[in-house]
Length: 528
Ligand code: BG6
Image (cartoon, rainbow, N blue to C red; front, top):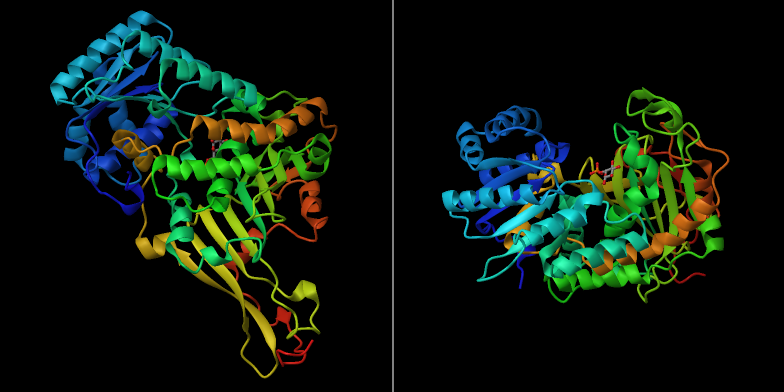
């Protein structure tokens, strides 16, 4: 049984890590700094080696020199010179085409040499930081070269990056292709959201605190809002994004991870399958929208020009690599229902978009109003409710809003927050978010990786939206200004239910004492 949520602090198993696409951004920005952090925390095995594999024609020496430059820029804090030398001397490079069998023979030889030099005991994992079209071909080549076999207690695993398919069909096909070559426990489908501390803390918050669970259901919760807002636009990823769009890019993976961790039943253990069974259950319980419901419960948007995150930018259609008539959405909002006993009737509102007013990812749990006997002369709209916000990024923490009497002779209600702030309470972390995921793969704990059925369940939910949006191109794009909170239709989606999106800035503003005047009604609890 895995003890990953109890914190084991043991060194990872000896192994060779191979990064496919090693000359790309992910390696220098995330993976190498993450390996440094693991080494610093003594979580990386002494018997470890890393091999970069990519098309670029460079030598191991040149690769090491480049990484030495990059680490200064991306480590977040200066890396100890001795530690860096230690890591560097176990890094190698193999040049090759992902489809060329001869390159895999060279890789095989390099793996054997590294295994000998660093006594890595025959364990390997392959990180596929490559374009999705290469996921299956690379796995196939590895298998044909005899590099995925597990025997005599030696393991071989593959980490597959996103996007995992572009719809239900392609995700199913990719799962089938991979499973022809590998066993499911060898496949680690990564979702970098699960590397974020606050996301992992969701389970701890819910299941390690006895005050949370009794309130965590339809009797106390009115609705849930999940927001993943970015201020950046498509940046240099126009080619990919234009064929993906906000819904595909963020919802079936990242937002559904947040949704399933928020809504899941308590697992019977923190064993990988026990946790993932409960998450999968939720994804299966999310009701796919009918075509008519897509029209009323799904909103899409595309950004216009404007200033977001302090940067002035063009509208989406004038970004590099984007068609001037593009119909790709850069914003998506959905109203979903999770049909379980716990959540019946509680809407889950999801929104994500680029070039929005603020960079923030959060889950807001909106509790029901208290009975209004005491405050019956107060307008219902003025009676603010309790709200728990789980701040995923950039300021990681949890805050709980509640009403308090503003000091003074008149009865006035102020809103105050109780806050837990990760940086303040636990200190700043230079974690890239990949440490835990790499470590878990090395120790064989797949809890934070997606299983085939989870990926497919996610696609099943959004497939009807993809289909309808494809069939009905939008006429009025762009429909929101950069720096705003998205299209007006997204506000209407909630307004129709008598609700509104949480105003994100509000949590950081102290309430004005006179903001919410409350008129006391009869003060006897028994009065009706
Ligand atoms: C990626 C998406 O998976 O997640 C990007 O492809 C998006 O479009 C990114 O910007 C967001 O990640 P994070 O960690 O910055 O919230």
